[in-house]
Image 1 (cartoon, one colour):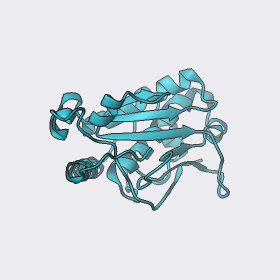
Image 2 (cartoon, rainbow, N blue to C red; image 1 turned 90 degrees about the vertical axis):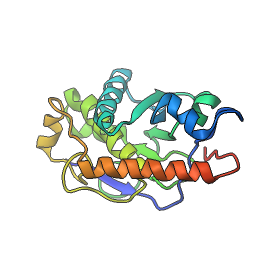
Image 3 (cartoon, rainbow, N blue to C red; image 1 turned 135 degrees about the vertical axis):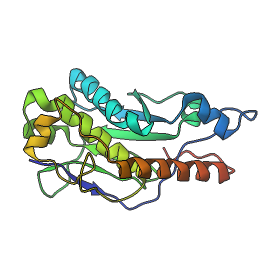
Length: 208
């Protein structure tokens, strides 16, 4: 069973403001690097699987210069204002009609609500228990990359393939599926576009 991803088509709004009037947006962001804050609405996800998945996602995105920070509650305002991006990830919730091999979907252009939806029950029933944390970590990283790139696209190879084969799922436990050089470049372009948007905006950006 592979991974199939559905992408929404709305407008992305980013939280990225200076922490105080005396600090510029660029200075604020430089203090914590390319931090992406992930607020996880975890549903019935087992804690041990969550921790493994978070570590796997961090490892996959680190070569792109992305640092993930996770929380199951709201982040402090100053940290939200300095981050490159704030993403809400919902695990569980309503499963849409359609093929049962859809494990997740992202709405990278959405301006409100959860931007990533993970159907944990489908993942748990679709692969063996010892694979859960590794597979979920790749699903996290895959969907976060969609949001960072801000594009409804997939790659021919690497993490951003539209489907993972059974062999890919087992291989994840030994070596994470990496991002391609093209996807890393698209992440950097996406972040640059977000910085330009935040710098040009003169009012508060919430989107949550």
